[in-house]
View 1 (tube, rainbow, N blue to C red):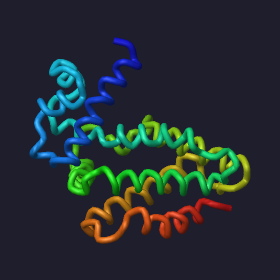
View 2 (cartoon, rainbow, N blue to C red; view 1 turned 60 degrees about the horizontal axis):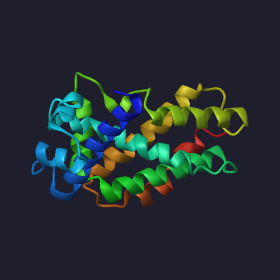
View 3 (cartoon, helix red, strand yellow; view 1 turned 90 degrees about the horizontal axis):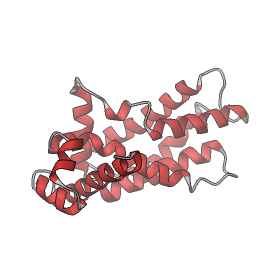
View 4 (cartoon, rainbow, N blue to C red; view 1 turned 180 degrees about the vertical axis):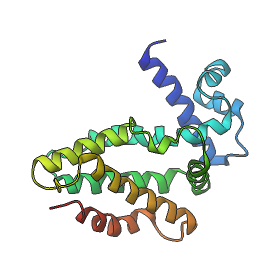
Length: 194
């Protein structure tokens, strides 16, 4: 199977699953409904996933699809600081509008106790590649600190985002993730700017 077709099939399953999880809840969604919604087959589903629980870790895949889409929208005239703010605001808007807080909280909690792959920390994800590109550009143009490595800058930013996601879930969404982030992320980012 070609790599593009593999990505499309897996992506269709993931997108369908998360749409159904959001619309009707995780427990109420069946594998058969995911297969029907994605227009794939049972064989394809089990080729990529051992079961429904395995889909929880795929949320990072949806995030990366969003980042790939957002990369195309990055204005070349924006500062690197502004690019990071833009990415954060767009992703957090997507999370608030289309990801069930219950599912996000479940994913974050499973990442704490899993002995297997920690999807959110996978440095090969598009998320980390894009952040490295922006941070490197920020260092090269003199906008970001150079006493820290690009990877250290990326880690600081990713920790700040994860902290906001965890807090939002712990607080049961009592505030707007996007709005609160718009005031907090710039404070974090000031620490990486010159």
